[in-house]
Length: 271
Image (cartoon, rainbow, N blue to C red):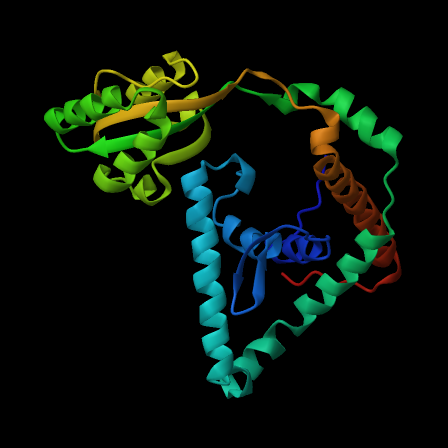
C-alpha cells in the first residue's frame, strides 16, 4: 500500500499550527516554548522531549536558549536585509506556501472524543509505560572518594536527602551536579546496566551503601521515587492522540486531493 510521505519541513509547519502552551524559559522577555523545543528534537527522531531524562531535557532547553540568543544577534546585525537572506527566502517561497496551505487543512480536521477513545483502545499495547525510577547520583573518580561520600551520608540521618543534594553539588564530576545530581525519571534501559541494576533494587528514600562502578567512575545513587510499569491513562495522553488522529486524517485528505488534481492536470514524465 502506498503511503504519503510528508517532508519534515511540512510536518514541522503543521506542528507550528498547534497551540503551544508550555513555557520553559524566558530570554530577554521572549518565551522559550514547545515550538522551540520541537526544532531541536528533530535531531532525535522517534524520541519525544518528555521521554528524555531530566538532565537531557535541561540540555535541550539550554540549547533552545542559546539558539534564541543567536537569532536575536542575527536580527541586530540585520541579516534579514542581506542579499543572501533574500535569496534564501526566494528559494523556499513555494515550500512556505505549501506549509501554510497544509496548516489551513489541518485546522479543518475534526476529531471526536469517541474517535480518540476508539484509537486508544485499539492501540493500548503502544501506551505501556515500563517501570521508572527517579534518582539522584554523585559521580566521583575513585572508590575511596565514593566511600568518603557514603560515610558523610551515614552521618546525615533523616537529613540525608538535603545532604545528598549538597554533596552532589560539591563533589560530583557529572554535569547533573549543578542540579544536586538529579536525573529525573528513567527506565532501566536508559542507563548502563551496573547503574540501572543498583538503582532499581533500592527502596524509595534509600541510597547505595557501596560504590557502584561503571565505565564513568564510581556512583552513589539515591532513589527518590518509583513508578510501576503500566498503561498510560487515556486522560493523560488525550491531546497527543488527538494530534495523531488529525495527522492520519490529513494524510488521507491530502492523498485524495492529490489524486483528484492529477486527473485534471497535464503531466509528462521526462526520461
